[in-house]
Image (cartoon, rainbow, N blue to C red; front, side):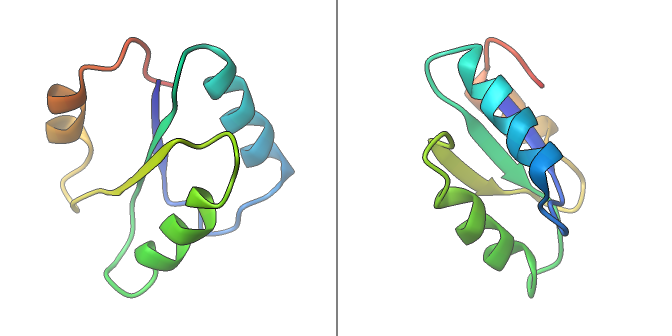
Length: 76
């Protein structure tokens, strides 16, 4: 499973959506959008969640390249 976003204000709705995404498959990869100053902090926070298996920082152009490489079963 793959999902992405900026997650600049992580809230209960994000948590529920991430949990739901993880429940759809064997693992969850989360892509984080944002600038070089804030995205790493958001990625660290997401990586600490027990239902997130991997986190990657996304380039400004989006997730297309990462999705092509990962070939996830489902994109949420």
